[in-house]
Length: 221
Image (cartoon, rainbow, N blue to C red; front, side, top):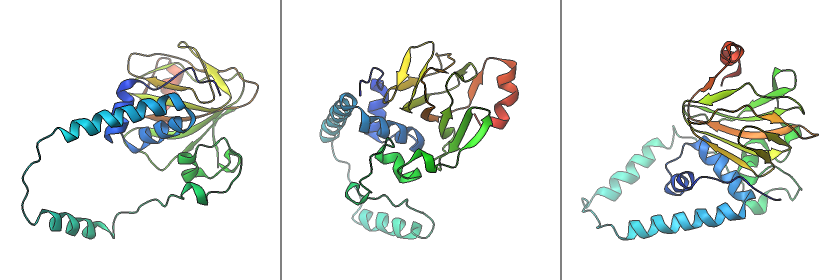
């Protein structure tokens, strides 16, 4: 796999610091599974963060601070639901192009996803990690294009199968588009097979055509 589009440094630092939304962190984690270069950069970011933490002067706390934290955790046990994650050794040994972090949500095959149609040739599946924006899979047929749009916030789009081309370049499996509010684009699927992408946004898209603004309430973007 030849990956040409990588994560921005700010995104990696945010991921290493644990300050991302669940949706953004999921896309980042999936790219790191696929990209050895960004994995190395992420490890470097974590090392920098660890060194900064070690240099901090410890703050004084009350003697009962630990007991208070444990009591607060116990009080939330009945209301907080933790997603069960299978250890890698327990996952089926099936060849799959579904990255392991995503497989914890949808299983090992894109064929088992309950796709919903937006328009002919464009399908989506919403993931359960919504957090102020959108977290979903997109499946777009060859020759189809998304409506042109820019962004009110950030967008991460990871190609899992197929490819698309936009104003930035060509994105194939493993490539990630790490976009901010300065980018306007219109992805067009140029592969012979459906293009499947994992997308996370932290704010609604800004469609630049009347049609886009009309269909936005129906698409959830």
